[in-house]
Length: 417
Image (cartoon, rainbow, N blue to C red; front, side, top):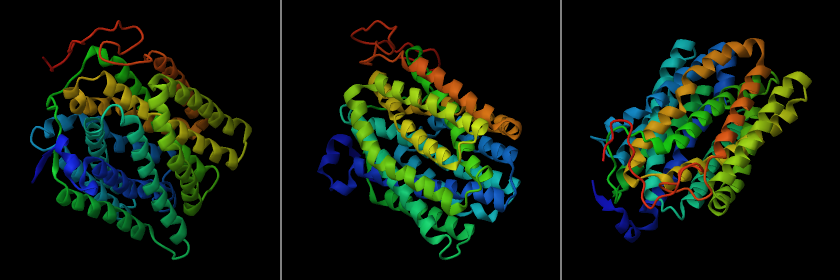
């Protein structure tokens, strides 16, 4: 295992540098996760016989590893972050490959927990590596590019499903094996082909909670709660209410991803130019309107095309969420990035553990109310975004803070200076 300081990484071949590894991981992860997501609603309805309550329970259980992402802090004491990220990417791929082998609620809950551990622990460490490896002045643009790479991989996965599902009469088993196997293979290659990159700032390897990060924590909590409603119920509505087939649902996903591929780099540059506050205000204002219109679908029956347009618009607004990452990067102590990424991921998933199952029961009687609650959450997020300063930095974490040349650690938990 070769360890290379980040300052020396510029001497490596372009394909072996940290940015290239981030792009490779950004490409590999969606191949498994996007395929799993694209087929899930049809698989659970057509093969496993799920209703709204079952799908809610599945997603609640899937989010438990995300809630426990704070456990990453204990693991990185013994395992390097880069190795941990790739190992969990392998787990995600293998678990995805096995999904169709368990067409029952109990079986899907089991295999979903395994894939979820891989996904959430990978995402936690990946976010930490992004903020450690990318310089602050280029981070928004680079995060936009990484988002576009992920969108491209997802588009490729969706395109393969649309092109081959009916033409070759594929089974769920075949598609899940192909997608999961690809992700696991790429992760093994990255584990062997890349050196271990050493950040110049050693990361604190214990849980860190700081008062001055409170707005970041609040934004993460509301983002997780709001996103869960969309992820769980928006696509499920397409199958349950409008009867879309696998290829039709996947085609909708493809259109969404094609637009995101073009928009994500532009969004990254816009965040860098106009700042995190403006980006978050635009995101939450847009999401508030979208969720209100989602609720209106059930009251006025505007049809499947309106639902599809709202689905695409929702994803575009979600792309602006990269501003939360760069906001934290600007206010954080460099050594806080890894432990705070784990804590933030847990905070992001607090609501995700109970919301899908709880709202699954509400969905049985009033789907419109579920989306109305999401609109309320978007409104709260909009209020929080107005507290983000125009130029965030240590000592100026919110508009209410008085800037100071240096910011104290201000620990309220186990971290000390």
